[in-house]
Image (tube, rainbow, N blue to C red; front, top):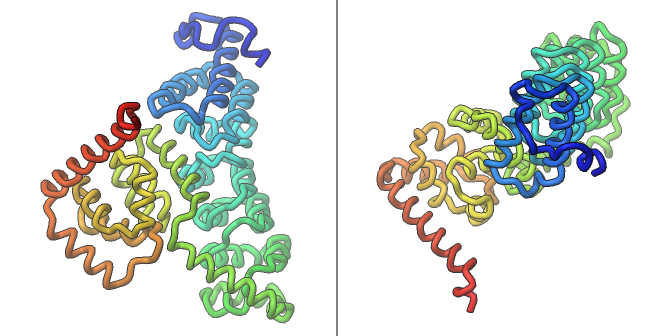
Length: 375
């Protein structure tokens, strides 16, 4: 707090944005704004976040690397942070980007993949060390990374390694003993099953890695298979932790004006159910509590009307309905019934129903919140 209390208040003058003040004053304002945001981030509305975002992005252009690195460290642990500023700093030199690449949950998979493709090996190493690297991100590292980032990925026991990623890693292991040895060390990989799933080229490479399958512990393998089963099972059902992560990433996407129909289609395509739900919450303008209630109650009607009112076509509607984190996975009969119901109501009818519902919900909220209603 001492740094904030010294000199002029952080918001006292924005003449620094026009280059009218000294470098030290610009740096002071940049640090103070980031520090202040870190204190109040959980209480800022979208408009306030947008204001911070705009000014932080402008200031990042006119301050030195050391100061940008300090601000990146302040933003890295925040669950809600200005989306444009975070992505800008995450694409900066590694001295600035590293804490965000390692720890920021505001960066989504598409952000990370773009950085993997276009930035340096040091950026890829930082990403490979993240907690819970998803399979899409891991596959991008396997495609574009040099040895150091690939080794970091394989040694990260919290990284998901899907079938396509494993094939690429196995191919690279043929010419790299370190990668091969690290792959052997991953006890959760069911090598016996993997042999029947990978293509013939990767299969020949896998043979060259040695008799890994002979060291399999059948008890450990059963536990691994149970974990895989639970991961599949848990695709159905709402997870509070996944929701919080997805919602904050979606809000950051909205900060950057990139939350649109294409983003929804991407979430559906890659099976990001919680992200799809969070995105619909923001796009439709309903509270998270309401949308979560729809999911928990398996309320297909409410979501169908909302998506029809939003003007989405049948293909996107079907994809979203089948990927959302419902309490139970929709059955094939559910899917067919949903499509019939979607076709039966016009966009105008759905818009009218949705507008009436919103008006009723707003009146109900006011009646709960006003002192007169509580008397």
